[in-house]
Length: 284
Image 1 (cartoon, rainbow, N blue to C red):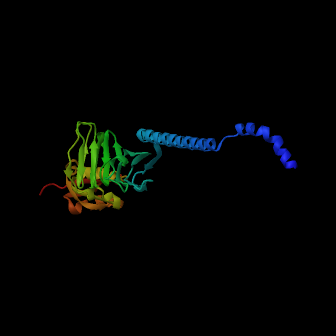
Image 2 (image 1 turned 180 degrees about the vertical axis):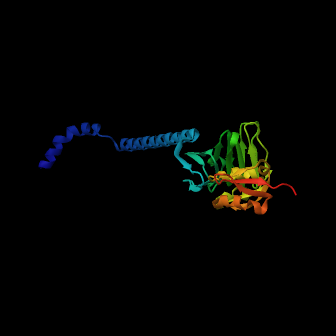
């Protein structure tokens, strides 16, 4: 009886109460609106992230830098975070800047060999390729293949040789020059140079602690040996232009001077302070 009486007492307020509460259709409609709003927010977030990534890709920001150096007579090998390898010769410096979509290196001095690592899609998706370039003074070398050597020379000249693949060389002249395997190029600010065949393994024999000369004037031989450390020797004017061929150990540079009379028409004397002096023998 009390329950019936309570329901009778609340009956006048039932309609007003129902008016304040949402209907089942209202609940479903509001849930769908919330889902649509969530989808729009997610799409907006995804669009913003995509736009941010696109801008970052276009700007190409740097995310890692590194400097590699060797002292006189020293060489060394470094592996970059992307798997590329840099082999520095004596008294050399390379500055590395890894960007989002490019790898930019600068050979500030000396000589280095670059063994470039490529992504699995190399050659298939050019838009996603991370360019690998080396700046040497006013000359820029862009990797197209795998392994190449770059050497700074006096007068802002640059020597580039290719062991594997191809490179594109640009030093500000009208057209860039492409080099392939087994080719070498010497470029200067005044001239782009031209590719010529080269014994690239001989040019990079320093990797194994060796040096190779092929019909090289003795004065140039001595200058080259001095790149790797002090070499006390003086040359007579006639001896300077004698041409030398052979393969020698960089760790025994002075021995080469001592052995000169065995394979060249020279005699070896000593100055007052004991410095070796090379004179060319008179013609018979």
